[in-house]
Length: 177
Image 1 (cartoon, helix red, strand yellow):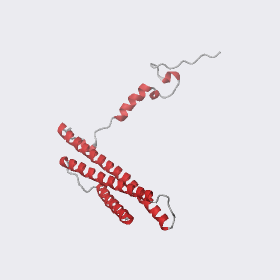
Image 2: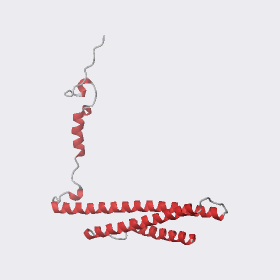
Image 3: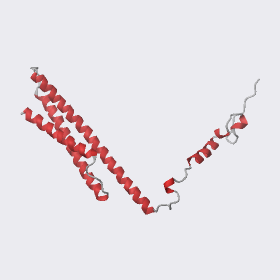
Image 4: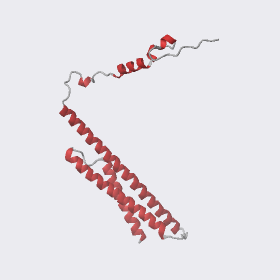
């Protein structure tokens, strides 16, 4: 008959039961983690007096404004993606059906796909313009507090896409008439 091996209890060390490394015990691992997480002061701050609460508040306010600006950029890019999808899909439908029509293919409801293409291109253009205008007003609000440059890459792209979308929409309407 074999004797059962004792199971370790929380107050016994793993070495008492032949389980190896004394740092493997959870209490030892947590103590070691605390030692590893302690970092000395950064070299640029060594020998410097601690920052005042006003300095910290100004830095955090600037960082919050930066995060708000980046969020506005992401929102504008979401507008651009959505609008570009609608414009390109609408233009593709219109051009595809125009090609069928030029090839002599008779469509049952020839005006409905063209109307759908025009609708999607128009909605995409409206979405692009609205997103750009919203971004413009958001930048104006942020510029009151911080000196941000208006001509940010996302804004330039949105303006270009708005102009291209308007051009495509006007071209589709002129061709349909």
